Image (cartoon, rainbow, N blue to C red; front, side, top):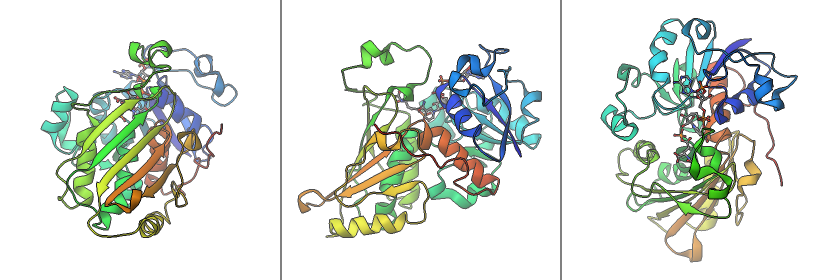
Length: 346
Ligand SMILES: NC(=O)C1=CN([C@@H]2O[C@H](COP(=O)(O)OP(=O)(O)OC[C@H]3O[C@@H](n4cnc5c(N)ncnc54)[C@H](OP(=O)(O)O)[C@@H]3O)[C@@H](O)[C@H]2O)C=CC1
Ligand SMILES: CC(=O)N[C@@H](CCC(=O)OP(=O)(O)O)C(=O)O
């Protein structure tokens, strides 16, 4: 059994990790931390876990965490980087759900996250945990940087187009919408029901920290040819889900049918990417609770613009499910272990 620890077990991604890990046949949860709730039984706070998890929250101290084989950090940005060097030294593997190890260029990371990086030397060693891109490297990694939620939806949508050199590298637009759980569980006026309900607005239009992460991924897929991407997030009055509408201009006359076949081929062996039939409209509710990305590709009016629709659950394929998928790969387990969950409709 893999001994696992979750730092930040009271947050939304933390409790989602617990929901997935308690049903994972190869995992034994050894530690779940919260500074605010230390000593309190997990099921007291999260009654959905009653009968499944016999643990109390503990302080995130290094001695407890060092007894694990793997530690997930479901903490705010800037927390994992303080404990990672010591955990790796003690032979513990780490998956960080925050952004501490996602951006290769340290000055770029420090600019967007407003922090000084505590262990920049470990960023080069870490592997960006998008399995559809980096499966082999993830298998050998000690430290995995779990991708951001928007970057997951956007990169999976653009990948077949860039891999096949089908689009101009200029003018890429990612128009994205998220549910409120993307903002985490801490009190926040903007995500109160009476603020976010029955309304819809963009945010971070002049700059969002996921833009450099998305750009870094697209630069890699295009071998340096993509130089820019416009990313605009919006807040939807729903709890879970991300919908990304991606635009690009086609280099040649690839038909909608051919684009669709190409997407199907690109993802035919991917357990968690579903290319829907031609003409489909992926719905966020179809991936609610599931580790799935659902995609559809269009060429409206036979014009030279290609439109990709990409949906995920921000807390699952956009965070905790993807983290469990990465753990499975790191430990040589079947990739779908513990993750065969069907989306919740309606
Ligand atoms: N919500 C989402 O959809 C997604 C979130 N992420 C990322 O995952 C991470 C967690 O997000 P989310 O679950 O939403 O966050 P929450 O704000 O809901 O939870 C944060 C958790 O971290 C703990 N924590 C806070 N500060 C510290 C600290 N200094 N040391 C140890 N533990 C700490 C908190 O407990 P306590 O303070 O009691 O210790 C709490 O359990 C973030 O980095 C977020 O950006 C990634 C993808 C999607
Ligand atoms: C709706 C909302 O506020 N979403 C968050 C992003 C989600 C997230 O958790 O960001 P990471 O994936 O980088 O950790 C935001 O825009 O900041």
